[in-house]
Length: 357
Image 1 (cartoon, rainbow, N blue to C red):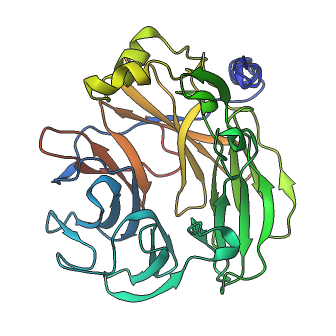
Image 2: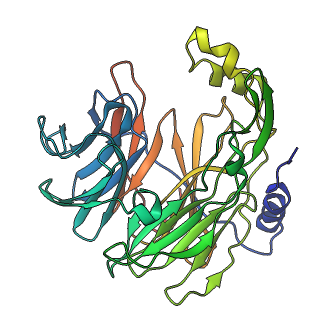
């Protein structure tokens, strides 16, 4: 059993932060007052700032991408209510003045203006096994996360995924970095032996800047490494985090997501002993990496580490309540919060760099 590979670096980072050798990063708590737009989407895991008060949000369970306008306080479907350009959207990102939406059902990536007009589509590349792009830099190169082939018993999950870059025409794929392998456990059942990812285990996150810089958040080392446009890597500093055990209450909350007839099967899944230091990551327009930190079920605050291009912790952002931040804009963040009628979308003002509160 693999135990908390990030625990020692995290503890070391905490000691450095508290030992007087370096001033701790400022902690900013966002104001509770926010512009709010209701939506009927069941879940909104990702978002992108389009400029001004407009954002794009991904709602995979509803097979939709929405355009959120906080001026008109409306959410309109990208492509219109009867649009045929999207079927199963699964990826969403912005590069320059273009919005990109990956669609696994149509096996293509569609390009849209920031105003929501369809431009063209790029078919998925067979050389990358149909994997959809996750980012694009200013030179027009696409970036992909290519996972190993799983295999019939899931043994491929033990291998590492890779961040791959191609040219504008999806030509000349080049592996830039290998990501950490998933935390896998061997499971025996009536169907035989198989390899399953541990519930609550983490995975590396990554993002790309317009100049081709690449950041990779290392889940087992709890740090953010940066690759500059010339290919030189900068190793980030360990981030200060507490180690959170996976409790019985965590397991119970997880099992509640399954219908009663499937819970006995879900109970057989392997669970990680501790939670990862972060659950998600995304890139801010300012060129910083944002990491959503893990938390205990009873915590009333969700924390985000903002890491600069030197791999240093620049700020900690705190968000009260059940919401979570999914995108960063200029001077504001977009958060989503569950409600009875669907996900509420919140726009909160972001204090400027250097502010303390």
